[in-house]
Length: 126
Image (tube, rainbow, N blue to C red; front, side, top):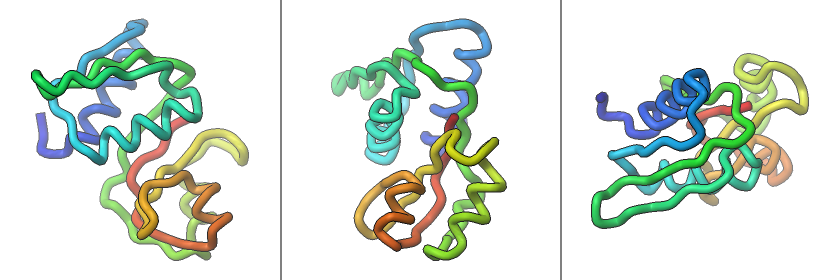
């Protein structure tokens, strides 16, 4: 495993989906990963997640997710540049979500455009 817990977790989710698994357990968690899981649950990419604080792990039940990846390097984007990256990472308009870290916390690209703020690209899923 690498040092990037978000990239590792998203890769595990993608591989589990390809293997036909419903649930996975991720042994390494971070606060950033938990916030990403919250957004993915809101958008129904995952059904539920359960954090085990003793073992510092999280169990995830997958939902409607076909692809999920971390964006490397973590590009910094202004509010006007978000559209360029939507075209690069998402398959079509209205399909998928990009997660952006802003000064108001993590949010989807739609929320960032709505609020008129930029930030750092973290991940995408659809």
